Image (cartoon, rainbow, N blue to C red):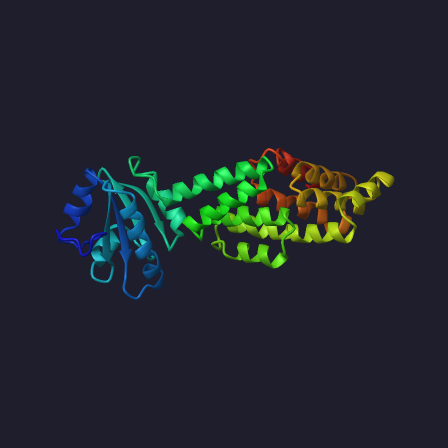
Length: 296
């Protein structure tokens, strides 16, 4: 068998058993079913080659042209391309279709290669984790430096883009700066959904500022505890400052006492925080369940 490049092996019916079935007894074999006319295949192919190469000698990429090898495509029940099949020990252990982002691809394949060397994604993830810790501790300068370093390593890293956008929001940066960072996040990714939720916080910031700021809103609520608008604004100000526990508490209180306020604005605000932080975040707690029980 002869590799058509250093990063993959062209496979057909004459060498499939040797390269894929027998080869998967010693290494993880990733089979890429593709075609020359397939646009998404051309997108995924180079990324797949790079990722497999980066994961080291324990994994190999085999490429199957479905037009020239319809028997192999039928044997693996390929219905759309690109289709990726992962074999280990002669068994199919994973599969997916379509062009997926590089980070998701490496994460998915890496789990099948436990001895793979650390890659750029892991290094970037470490920087992002460290930045998040620094931001939670209030060290904005260190967090900013770490996020910038992460983006120098990988300018498309969604977690770093999201983290820096959140930091810029806390710094009261110009709206265009925040939207530009969110706009660079891969559409359809987890961070993309969180980024869309973060943009909602720009509306919270506008509402808080228009009402005179956090102190003015707090004073207004203190003088009129039944004022749902004042309570909503206090929640907006808290969210912008990163105090999500206060924000969720204030908004949930509105839902309990004034459900029709602003056509569900309090509920929408809470849901945006759920998306931004994730359901496992301590501040979110059991609010999703409580919200559902209260409304339905």
